[in-house]
Length: 185
Image (cartoon, rainbow, N blue to C red; front, side, top):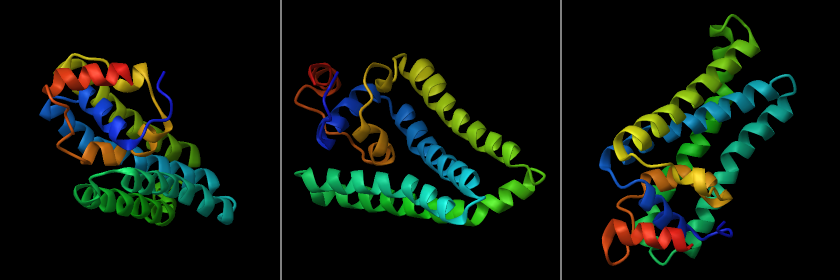
């Protein structure tokens, strides 16, 4: 198992498992749904106590922003990473605000039932995962997701940045070299 790897290593590992353009597009479109549904679930679970609701939702948003800042800070290519990093951080903050504002509306749409609203959040999250794994990895690339062999906190927290930060930094030798390097990490 890799120790907590730096962002550039995570990008190389990610590139080795996401070589097909359609798989990259599927991830870029569905990873945001994972984060929004997670923030909405945090808002729903914390709703009985307003302070806990805000803390839970902002924790879901701030942790990835902190990881993104670390990734940019350690990267040698800060200038090319700036736009996807700012977009990713803005998305996480926006998803927190959306979750705090819309969680009551989602609950109302589900007949004032918190369990039904939570089921909707988990359903969206499961659908996003299903598209990424079932279609992107198994049907398109015919490979196993990288998280099946190794999932680090940095990869989990920067998943949106990884999905939006393209093209990947492939070592000399292209995709095969990236796969070899990722196995060595």
